[in-house]
Length: 238
Image (cartoon, rainbow, N blue to C red; front, side, top):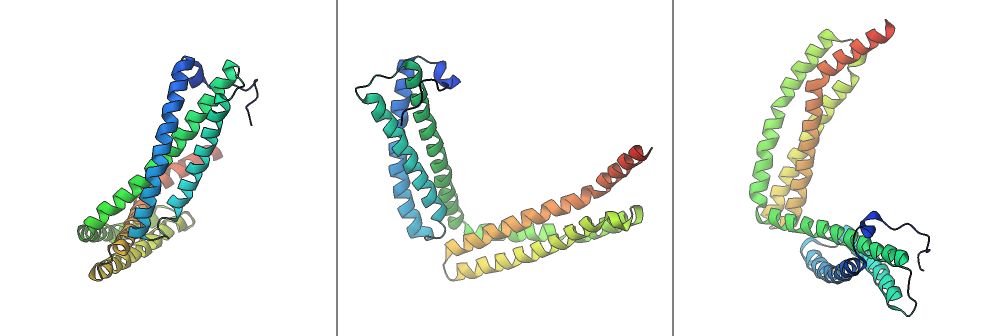
């Protein structure tokens, strides 16, 4: 379907000459075709290395990229047919080609980079798990500090102001216990020479430690935030 002749032309397509826009669209199509071919090879390699489950999202992204490529090439074919388009319509179609191909290439690149990261982590999975064990120990040392901070909050603020703080402390402890379990699971996977599973467990541990750190940081800031809320309430009452 051709865009309406009254359709708006994106600013990016207005600021360059028509020949330059045609060249950009042509280069974008070639780059898109190469990106899809490379992604198809990457998907086959990744499925063999990581399994179908871990590559399911990338397969979906690749299907979307193929659909975008199909639409972009269809627009190019319309521009190449015998019917000459008005310049504003041609600019709009060329801009759409550039948009479609650019978005699809960026998404494919992001997921391809994700697999590169996974491969790197597999290569250093034992060291990664050791690093996480160290981060876990450091974060656990913050738990007694958080308990002390909560006792201080209880002495300065009413109990009804503290349920969220207590929930954060409980969640942080649970998350760190989960991280410990993930690290143990990762090490067991290494013993079976299953590095893919080891990395999956390690990343789950990393996420749990990160979430716990956020919660502990919120506990540390709670006194200042509660004091600010009390002052704001006092001003409103006054």
